[in-house]
Length: 107
Length: 125
Image 1 (cartoon, rainbow over the protein chains, first blue to last red):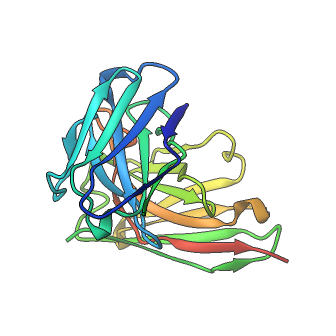
Image 2 (image 1 turned 90 degrees about the vertical axis):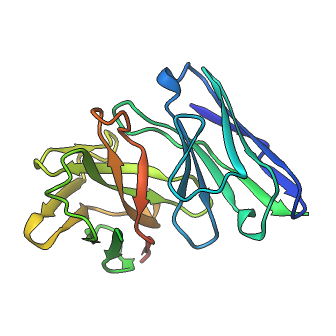
């Protein structure tokens, strides 16, 4: 089971965002991914392997953590970053569960 | 450029069968041995939920709680795969996505790297 906090994060453009994802059991090989979902769109893969940016993802996104505690940081929020973020455990069968999400909204 | 596009009816009555197709372009289902082609759904305001996947070999895998109602198939000649979900209820109302995920061999089983835009399916009498 994945838990994400906070549920909602209210920030201004240009500010730094820090999102947390906690697993109830150790995630092997740090098989933890982050997705961003803009309203009305499909989720988009941002980070895999806890800290690797997916193709085309800007370097303002960074992932860290291992074991059961993981963090997604967005260094300077841009307009398109106000969205919902999901963490997901992968690498096991069945394909991994998603966390409940953190909404980043404009303050 | 890889693209996945869902299509199918958007409104169903309870007890009917949901049928969706995912057309894949820019890459070949049959030529992608390291990948699986899956279906997920996302009820309003909730996180995505995996439904099932198919491999180019024809092997299928389903979420255990849906297994009795789900069938995923693929038409390699048309480069598309499909979802059938029988006996739908209001609880099946969701946006349905098709997506690609990696394999155990790639160390990315269940990592969804390409998604369709989604298809809203509403079940209502």
